[in-house]
Image 1 (tube, helix red, strand yellow):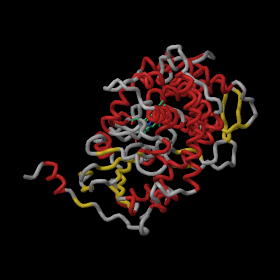
Image 2 (cartoon, rainbow, N blue to C red; image 1 turned 120 degrees about the vertical axis):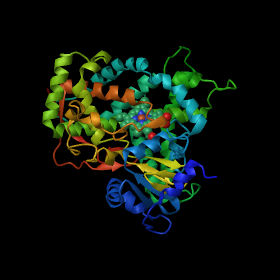
Image 3 (cartoon, protein in one colour; image 1 turned 180 degrees about the vertical axis):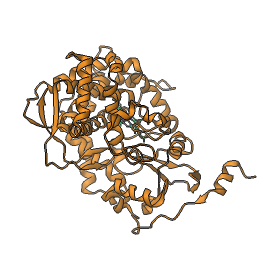
Image 4 (cartoon, rainbow, N blue to C red; image 1 turned 90 degrees about the horizontal axis):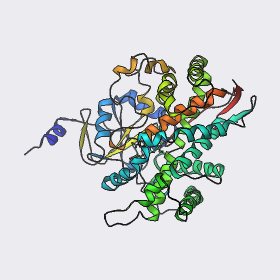
Length: 455
Ligand code: HEM
């Protein structure tokens, strides 16, 4: 008997053949030389369900229609899996933490961490975010130049460490350098020919990455160790993870605790730092938007520090953040693996195909957004986005694996934009290269130099 699902698969068209590219690696090098440009051209050539090949790395399919994207995201955990645990770098850096784990194990860990992200809990982080921002900018001198990406990394790192682990890092600059190596390594898992080498084969890049992860871990393990020997009770995410017991009344293993802490630390600050960096660039390039943001911040705050209660009174600042995340969704793409043969957008997709969702392209698609390339926060206030199809705007992903930190990040983004704009205007230093580096996230490849102007 044909089950309805099989019947759908029967009538679905076969996918057009992917361009084979080179033996073994397929079109991996074409992709990795310009991932966003490659996917944009693929979409143009093949439409909303577009195949490409990573050779022995398997069939890849870009899906660009919001309805199809919704099916993939909602089906994660059933028809689809994340499939992030292969490769060399991902298991080494993120292990089996919240971003990468699957199935019942993921569900249990997510439930465990969730209370740290409830609205009431998040509200209690607002004052820390504002205070640490005020400390970060206290030394800024009008007329001086700063790498704003570095500044944002340092600040969001402090905020994540303080709010989630009630701790301070001893050498944030060293950790940032190590993190850059780690992000490069993660990128390599899906953008480098080395991804095709068996994981047991050592290469200089792999040795370098392993050394960075070991050094990085030491800093975070020191926080865990300090907590173990601290008799005072704590009420933070770290305490939730350390005090959790499974069905057999066993605590999380040391390795698992490390994976969760590293994952939350990285996911919890690098993304927000990149978002804000692109935001300062856009504000510098769009003085009219910046003037309106400053006007709102001045009239609502009147010079005093922002609080959680102010967030509702800052609709324009909130729209600015949404618009930054539309043009620069720092998680610029995500992917899922098909657990079985499926139908997507009328095409038959074989089991184990890797499905790509590219938010960077989705958010700039003129079918869903008018003035798609303009920095136009007003669109979020004047009703234009009310007709936006579901799943056409996904800075935090969607479905069961939606970002656990979305409200945390939105609050942090608005508070930092407001707090810094109260005192300073950041102007891009002219003549610098502001290349996008699309790895796991989109980072400014050469940092971002700004000239500090006092308001
Ligand atoms: C602007 C800032 C942020 C952006 C753009 C962002 C984006 C994303 C996206 C797109 C995903 C889904 C990945 C996928 O489906 O494959 C995700 C997952 C995740 N994010 Fe965020 N994120 C941000 C901030 C944060 C913060 C502040 C935290 C924690 C404090 C966090 C922790 C996580 C975790 C743990 C996951 C995995 C959730 C799961 O699979 O259950 N993120 N994030």
